[in-house]
Length: 445
Image 1 (cartoon, rainbow, N blue to C red):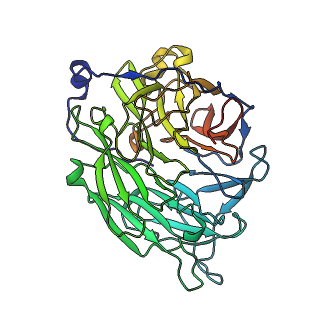
Image 2 (cartoon, rainbow, N blue to C red):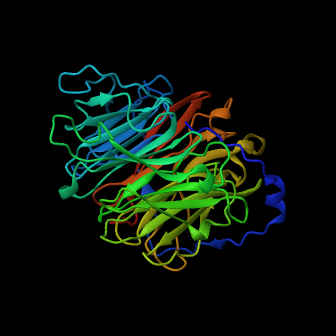
């Protein structure tokens, strides 16, 4: 779920009058990716905006919300994504002998630590439920009050290093106040870490973002050093928008905030979440992708990286909406998004029906993402014809064409091959979760 903000701006005039310099990503030396046929995750449970992740044991997990009152769904694959089984969490005990009920269905997110423990968060607006599984989703502990009250769009990230297993973080927007980050640590008790987030601190206030209304944060990630990052929209750039960056250092209780400087001229960032990734090196490398609705005819997928000291130039990877990114080796990233470029449309997804837009899942890769001007492969279609017509990006204000939710997602397996989770619309109003796996081309390991 994504509540739309309200901020009076002359967006249409901005689109027409303010020029935007767009570096186009040059072809990469990476071999073009190929993909296996898509896999239906579970057509008995329609859902939207599926997240995907791979735990240290190689198990693939997909999660997706069906809508309130939920709870949201989790599925597991033990065979590399060929088949999936439903893995809850459903109604679960708040303790080994407890009777807590997990409710949600508005938004969900899932993360795993280095030992394979799963940490789940599930929005029901008044708060978010939390759930933890210590055995791959076979059993769950859960409770209905996760972090801060009156919130929208929670995300969760677990520390990826074994010595810090159980360090878990969540970020969400408290409506009318700002973005809060919440922290869970292992406890000397029977309560699993991540079931309760006892410390919540204000990351950035609405006033500091220049925000009137609501605009939830983008997702969060924790790197090999234990530092946690997330991105969020700000409304102070030259085109009335931009992307903020928050860092919570390992062991700290306060964040530092800055901006993704190559995105300071970005347009309306309430149309899609900006997304961040970190690689698997012990460094401060960051990778950010965002949708830039430059004009009614030009919706670009943009990318920039940070090498620990400076930002790269922003480059255009393709055209469309709802990008997601994953990284592995230093400077190696994969990006997936919804695009109608194959059918000749590169404009506003909300107006796709007039152009007979046919939406695909596009994919591009860079093996030099830390370069001053990164290069990407030409976009290829990982899946085709997943929806036609409009994609409503208006969040809860949508009355139709909302089946995709607000994002798709991408991860990678142990070999560095891409895994994309997305929604296919076979009939209006119903979204079915799909996964497609890379089976050829360069990997990002």
